[in-house]
Length: 250
Image 1 (cartoon, rainbow, N blue to C red):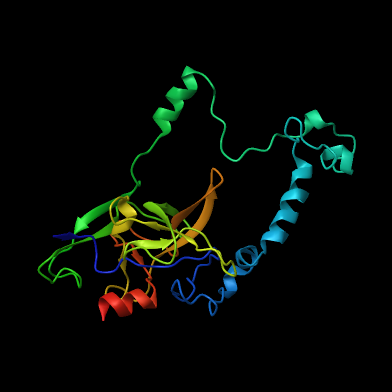
Image 2: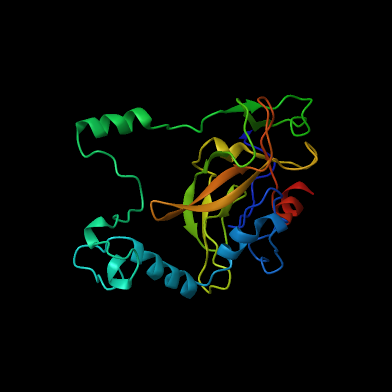
């Protein structure tokens, strides 16, 4: 049986910093505190849904209202922009607008990248701490230099709802204080290259990548971000949750 790695369950939060926050589990997030370098993102993560909605309404003043929408909060009507008219305000979009033509379709096809760029999945040798067993183990390595805060790629998998998932699962959104089950993403049956990132313990003194939640096309995604410079040939390593390490690695 081919195993992607010995450790595949980790959690994620929206607060981002050079130093990753302590690992937490899906059942214990109350004690997590953001690092000092993450003040602004941590404030964003702590926003209540009501406060975020207030910000959405306030920010909408700077965009053209949708057809048939209420223009009372837009541009000059609210005093923003002085004499600027509704037509001068930009239209708010949630994703890039590509040319609506055959050329636009060609541009999209040419720009598409179906794989995570700049990484290589490798079989781990017997000299690797995780490669000494009988099963084949894999890891993800940098095929180019990465800088601090570079985005490696998205952690993809099957979306599920509830306090579950396999050892390849992680949070897809942060619902701290919400009574509903959080969404997760599980890369057991399908995923991309990022599913092969190993836990750092026993391999390096600290992780060099972390997982962060972002919103793309209005939907949550989990991105893998570099927390330090990574040279070509280095293994990409995450910090997994204490719960996973205790269950699968002890």
